Image 1 (cartoon, rainbow, N blue to C red):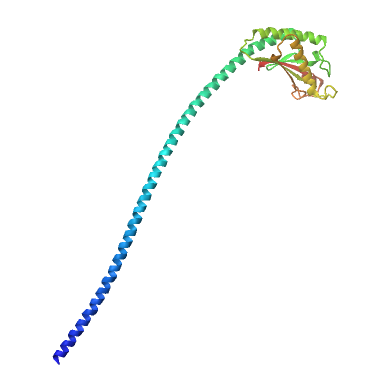
Image 2 (image 1 turned 180 degrees about the horizontal axis):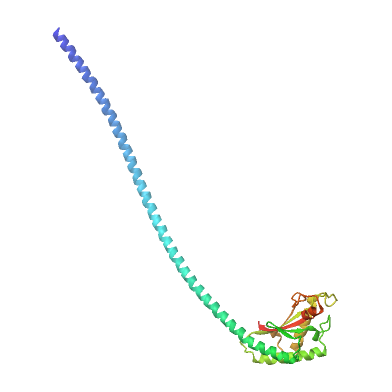
Amino acid sequence: MRRRRARAALGADIAALDALKQQLQAEVAALGMQLDTSKEDLVRQTDLTAAALAQTELLNRQLAAIREQLGSLQAALDATKRDNAAKDVRIADLGKELNLALANRVGELERYRSEFFGRLREVLGHRGDVRVVGDRFVVPTDILFESGSAELGPAAQAQLAGLASTVAEVAAEIPSSIDWVLRIDGHTDRRPISTDRFPSNWELSTARAVAIVKFLVVQGIPAHRLSANGFGEFQPLDPGSSAEAYARNRRIELQLTNR
């Protein structure tokens, strides 16, 4: 009886140990699976890390190449800016030199213009209605043309012959380095005109200027030194409506100027 109980207790212990063994084996198997999974994850992570490192290295090389290109472009840009700055300085210097040269030319021609005006006053007999306005010599058209006409009568031709002689004398003294021209500008008053020959004051003022230029050319003044212009009534000296204002606005302006 005692042996039977001892054998039953031993069987129970063996069964318990066997159950424990199976439990431990199951746990070992589970841990093994976890370990395998961890190893696979580690391998994958390692591969991903290597790929990331390779991609990072490639990007770094590309970034370095781009920075080098940017550096070259910046150097070229800086060189271009320096060149442009130098050119701007040179252009500014040339502009100053040109302005100085033009100022000298204008100043040089101014002396001949003053002499021309002085001699012209003598030719026209120091008339009170003949005057200098700025850099222009203003002659009333009434002493050269009949009303509404662009024909030069004998008295006008005598006056203009003296003008031609004066221009020729002054032109002979002007240095060849000065490219000058004598402008003949015709102006009318604002009273309208409408004839077959002169539909408006534009045509009348222009025809008068052309008539004077043609006469001067016949007198020997080179045509390329003359310019005829008509302004009609649109550049009045006097905005008034009196007879005196109209008389002041009917005029021929002579201007010795640079071309």
